[in-house]
Image (tube, rainbow over all chains, first blue to last red; front, side, top):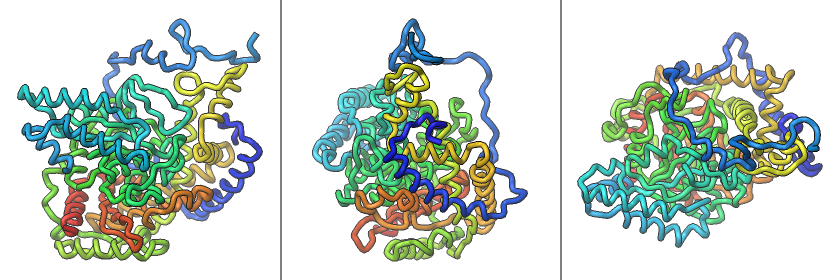
Length: 88
Length: 472
């Protein structure tokens, strides 16, 4: 699960979390026993549909201001390490 | 002075906004080293803004309904150019390129931001101990927690560091700390307050709301921050009539239900005694009180601790070291993502991301997330039948008064139980608030939760005002 979520855990964390998560899963297992056959899953708590605005260009964020917050930016773009394989 | 009184004094020129701000800053200076309500105090910006308000008053321009009122913002509300950390290392140093809608609205109403408040990391917690920057202490007793996750905001108002504060409430994160610190805290109806600029935790549950010392102040803040916003696609299209207008209408003839499933087992006897006193006060004011039952409410906590982590695991996927905040170096991007997230997130966030990832994973989706969403429907249906018989429901806000620092940190399940009274309302989208109602055997504050149907804020505030008045 940790790998799926892009987390790397130490052995100590793994030991501790496993017990804690088991306890939670035992508790929430009570929902499995409930008969909810035929009930639809809740997609939205209130009966309102998506609010849509007219599809016209509006204000946008300033590119330089956005990129100023990036760990590394270059030529108006976010820069990341190689996506496939190692750096040359 | 209450927020409403400060605004009246500033608007009429009797008091300057600058002096209101200076007073708060000096109380912060004196007390926050112990309480640690703030991650950041924005003294310079607050003084500049106060002088602008005073200039507006001098020129005869309308300075807004909350003119000169010092406000503290939970540190998951985006403030342009001002660090917004969610009390997480992963966002340390990030300065958002925009203001949240609620921040804009408060600013335009004349309120003055004095700082960003501490919280459980990404709003995951019930004690404000899950902060990367250290815990906040309860101003009523520094050995106790202020509750959470908006503990810094609750403590700031309780300690007099700000007249009003904003928090966010996903499973009780406004109401529970309000109860534990002895202030008023409101979770508005889902969609009533725009969440544009609120860092997302669990998007089907999150709502922004106020902390104040009086019911009238919360009404005034809600009237300012509520309303439709095209930048939030879950925002309710219609505006609510001002809550302030009907605040003094009383509860004569209203049908009030005592929610049995949230008021019996597991509630401390001194908390139950205060609820009983509150019920008597409502009855004396003319309300008709009876027991109400929402059988499925007992499954609220289980449904919540599947749904909220599932949504969180998806929302927090964006913290990948690419666009903002922390980046740990690695030779390729997937390793950089993993190294950044492992170093930047704290224990509770990691736990919830893993629960959520599990509940959504192939083979388990139907058994966990899918089932929880159906249980949510069951809870919504049960509440709907209760609203045919009642105008309001009451329960304790928290099963106990404030617990000791460190008491529940090693036992996540015990911490999660703190939310048992507050989570059902997030699942249903309804509104609820916590009203301080005296103290328990340990002398610490007790809060009573008043719940109303979706968009029932007016009636809920009327009951809150009656409770407040009954203590005078």
